[in-house]
Length: 521
Image 1 (cartoon, helix red, strand yellow):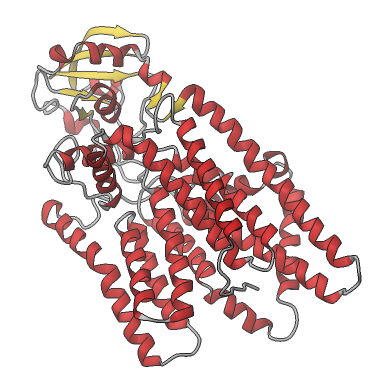
Image 2 (image 1 turned 90 degrees about the vertical axis):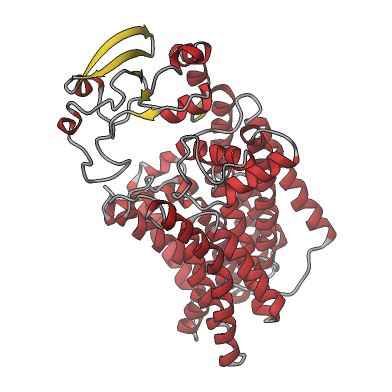
């Protein structure tokens, strides 16, 4: 079903993919030109770590706590590029994201051409689908580590195919390095170590002893940097990967998140609303898969398919993500967490469609059937391409007008935030508690403490009862509470609950929040 070859890029294809990559970079820069790259709580930790790294304070966030919840590669890259160009990490993120997105498009083009070498037009359409991708582009306009991880995954798949072709020390080193860097970008990259071992062991032919030796070498190189990092984490914090709580999401709920997210990527909402259409679509895909594997050697075809590096990665990543999201609290499964499989999954769908059409052409050697079948496939992909392009154009227009995350007009024009920016000398005399320490940190430049926590983010168990804070919060006794009304978090105690254990006296109120004197009862 999946074929590969030793053909090299033609000059025209290289120029085409480079041009599409440049267009992608420009789209990211245009989208982030007004407000900058989008900022979430994770983004602020990356930015703070990069700033502190350049300031000689190591991998720490603004509070001085060590970075443990994330691997160091992305903030280190922000710091490195910032130092090279003498710029702040927040401003550097826009250009860095644009460059990474361009490399994703180009790398995706390389994979598309390798898997669809017999159908160059389909391969080019595959690159266009990557350029128009909803999840990858959305992640690329945020200060997140996902785009870098996606790039390293694609490079890993490319290196794995190169290794399977030449099976030498250099190709093994390249594969090991790409996986090692992916592990140092996101912890879920550990799944790539097992993936790489299976790719090496599953290769056809070759000496079994050599395969085992290569698997051992690959494992040692891939896991060494991460082992050093998590050992450092344990020494500094007593945890390997930072504090993790039990997830609130069950296995069936996470599976439904995966299914619904995939539908949103590939199927317009109006069709999703009609379950009968979805069922018919599922039956159609099943039929296509069956026809592609029909005939003698069907079982062997399935086994070869499952051993393919891109198929194997897709299955293993999705399995690991669902299990980890069921066991450990994290962001809900959606575009962000599933974005690393967008390129492999999209190319695999194109390969499946192309294989089915080729099968029809081979069975019907008439003059017109192959032409009609290929034309139908190309027109179908072009129509399919309209959906992500349309969705991204609408989303981009919204980003241009409003910004993303904390980097939005709503947050920047917040009356309360503007007051904090303009009266920093007055408020910094006291310890400040707030329900949005990340926003205050990145927009007002103030180091604050989070107000009392009820549960961990997206976790099941209750960490504290409000009575636990009676007579003990705030620790400083004479502190300030900065409260934003429009953006309340359900994992924090609200104002009414805090009034049960502390004396809150209003200093000044705004349209979107207030500042209180807070003292222990």
